[in-house]
Image 1 (cartoon, rainbow, N blue to C red):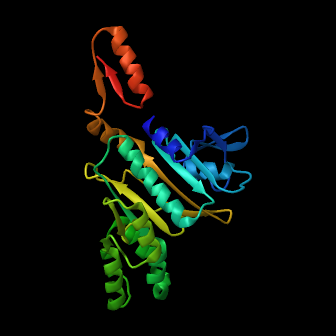
Image 2 (image 1 turned 45 degrees about the vertical axis):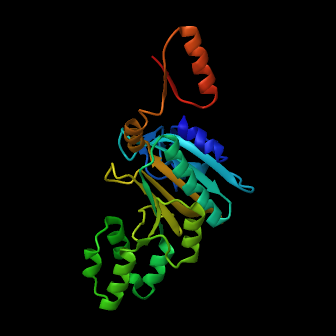
Image 3 (image 1 turned 120 degrees about the horizontal axis):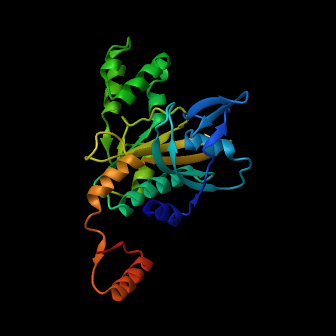
Length: 280
């Protein structure tokens, strides 16, 4: 409920997708099966499902979703996220990051940080060693610079990559990233060139959200292109959010007790104001 309200306050509208899709190129993840000489996918990746279902796109499109994604088996991972298509790239990045931040705050989760990275930075840094880009990217995903150390490239280039690999700060000298960080204006947001995501469709700016309570990202997203239009999206891991919000929300709910008529009248008034209540 809290995430839905936050997404809608930012101007996104909810999209409801079928559980089973006929298999087509571009659908990622999901569990595949055959039926009556056809091939189908159960609960594929939601972003690829949304993009594959759009027939016409005129102007901007802002959608959000909450759903389960399978990855070849019968048990999946629940996600909640947004997709913003057709806006100005920097403004989309700022809005989506702020949507993630305010969504966490709506759940009572305050202790987190957001790392913003750039694929273009790494494309430029590996221009002279393009044959090793795949290895450098895998090293970034695994956060293992030793993989780069074993590559047959010049020591000067390794030192350059090492500096990028370990850069994390408030200003990077990269205009696009600095404008995004300045506009978001949150002390929990950092520019981190070591941040990449393993999905193949991102075009440049991406981000991940972490909590010191957990050892893995609780969400993330990035910039991509859809039918020639810039787009930006992200998704939360709902399992991670449920663990964090259960710890954090205990004191935020107004507890009411007493004579039923008066108590429930007060509860109704508070709920209409958006105040969480518990009648005991």
